[in-house]
Structures are given as C-alpha cells and as structure tokens.
Image (cartoon, rainbow, N blue to C red; front, side, top):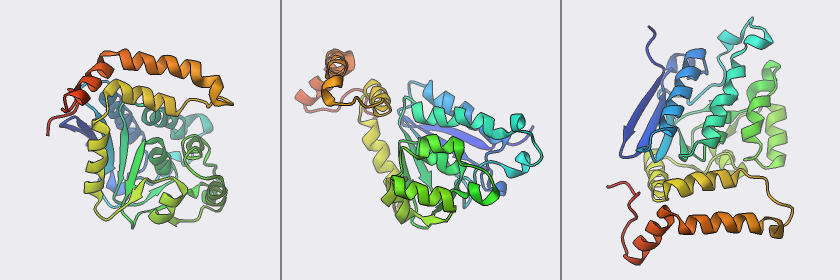
Length: 255
C-alpha cells in the first residue's frame, strides 16, 4: 500500500490537514484527492474540531492537477472531474478553513486557496493561473476564485497566465495576508475563529455565500428570523451570559 499523501492531526480543537507529496509538488493526484477529501469529511464531522488548517510539506503548496495522470486520458477519465467535490467541501465546510502557504500555488492549488475562508502565505510565495499556457481552461476553479478576485485582475491573470507575487495576491483579494511569520499569523486567525460559536460560524459561512437581495428591504424579513433564532438559541444565550459574567463562552477551547 502506498504511503499516505495527506496527514490528519487534531490538537486543541484544530484539525491540521497536510499535503505531503513533495516529489510532484503536491499535485492533485488520484491518491491525494481521495485522501484530502476523506480528511475534510472527517474534520467536518468531528464535533471536537473547531477550525481546519490546510497546509503542506515541501517548497510548494500545490501545483494543480497531476498532469502525468491527465496525459492520454479522455474527458470522462480526467481527474479534474473529482475536483469539484474537494472545492465544495472547503467552501461549504461548517468549520472555518485556513490555508497556510509556505510556498507557491498554481492552477487547481489556487482554487483550493480561494475556497478556504482565510488564506495566509509567505511573501516569497508565487501564484499563476497557468492553464491557458498549456491549452486548457481554468473552468472549475473559476467558481471559487472569481468571487474573491477583483474583475480587472481576474481578466488579466486568467488570460495571460502570468506569475504574480503574494503582495499582489493580497491586493486582489486572493490572500488575507503575506507575512514572514507565517505560523504566528495562522495561530492568530485560528484563535480568533475558535472564539466564535460553532453553530453561529457555520450559519455565518452559509450566509456569506447566499445570493444578495436586490435591496436590503427584500431581505430583512428572512434575516430577522435568522437573527432572532440565534439570539434565542442555547449557543446565543450562553454567549450573552458569558458576556455579562465577563468570561469566555463554553465553546472556546482551553489554552
């Protein structure tokens, strides 16, 4: 049996999912896709997990689809057919997901970064939508990337395939921050996310992906119902009581 390419570890309410296929720059091979999907499902279903961190070994976060597996395969046999499931798992995970990049991402790797809620990289990390350079289209990843990027940047970078740095990635909305102190920044975000109520975080993630009504007045009735439901919920009442008693709510992981 082949060595595992994705490691899963839970410490203090944080599930760390690590891509470990440096020999091919953490490309999205069939084995890596399968193990990554399984790890994401495990984290989503574990009540002890509050936040997910997606990271990697080796100098590259993810080089995109495994082109060796793609060579010679027909349209129905391409591994990219399985990739939407992973992007959907990241995008809709009830637990916030933080992407930790200590190196470059390309193509499908950027699609995963965009599907995460928070993304942090070292300043040296680079990015490129390299699909057009090999005669393919960044179709699947467009569904997670385009909601993040400003339109002018998306047109430029999708069409040229040019490489851009972490500073530009922050400017256009792909990353939250670029920092040399990567682990400290990830820890900062993890602690901030874990301070939120688990059910409130899951519902807020869903809220962020809802279509916006044409005018605020068209959405007030539905949003009022949602707000009142959570104010009255067990989690909401615990948060209100904790605030009054000047203590942390019972869902915050112990230091």
